[in-house]
Length: 544
Image (cartoon, rainbow, N blue to C red; front, top):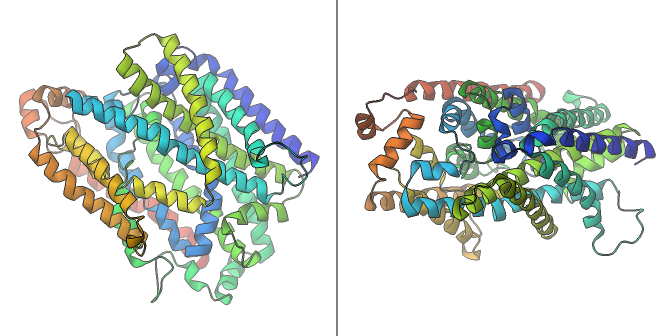
């Protein structure tokens, strides 16, 4: 990179840090300001922040590798989540906002009662905040490391003690920590808006230069076909030996999206929806997130992945295609801008995840079980939790090698409890024991699939095993254990008033539901068709 490139990167980092610190006063008031922005985040800012969070530096690398190995159809590995994301927008966003929780884990003790609910909240908060969250942040750091290596940024550095890759990531992590720990959610979402725009600009620039070399969309399609890889252009598995096994494709469409641990939008999305000003704003933010996440961002990366197959044939690590094409084509200044866009994607996701993880550790563990209500101490604990999670994630990132493999591992070990998380909103009979059983059984079955005796299973078969195996455990457990106490269910229903199977509780309260579940499900089906249709249409038009 030239001095001009480094000047662009420095300007971005200084601007991001300044912007984060400008809003620091808002995050320094209390825990509600730090974690949910005082419930005053505009819907459009929440939308951009949700989209930026799912757009990490690993994303273009992951999709380039996915397209090279499994073709366009491989993207159903993440396209399938449109079913649950649209369900969140149309059906659940208003319920989450109505519950008035600070974190999604807090809902556990609103919906369930007694010691099982407390144990479930503590267990899930720790698992999601520390091991799962740090692995997720870690593979983003792995991708950042690959970008740095792919651009050759370490080649001319003087000898440094320890692993030089660590020294490459440390300055970025420090900037993230400063503005995240200082300003809380306001600093995260304000900088997320800038970071999403910059990251998309970078993706379009790389796509444009690669297409210019290939000769345009039509020439790219012809080149892929001439290379004997026409199956890579299919949006669904085709032929006798499809790149994506049919069992895996079925698992994506029919299982993964409802069985996954975030099927109800839990985690960072709930944090953003809880931070909006009203139910209508929460719904609007979630719908437009789907547009940005699927319709807008898909094809620049897919096209780069296809172009890399033509321009960089035989690449041993296809995930390096994106930074290698950057290095090949982008002139001075633009290379720095696109590198800054990847920094932006990386920083937006890391800042979101450490803020979200800290909310679990402080609100759902320390604050809940210590009884400490002093806001200054809780804010201090939140900032220390932010630092600790970032350091642990950076440590884990150095034992990872393949972004796609880590992504699939996280999906698999989170498979199983999703159906319970959905049904608890609509069926009074779901209890804490059912959720505990679903979580434990899903995790145990997922880890069991890595045994050599099961190594031949496709990813889709593993999804089926964990989803239906978990169902076979939690459903009998629910029937064999007592329902939640009537007063607990009544309090939850009075606050949220969802549609569905709440007959006995509805009779006690005398309150009708605020939502028509049947109408909401019809709206969900229509919106899902619209989002996926708009996502797939450009590919059909470009590559037939």
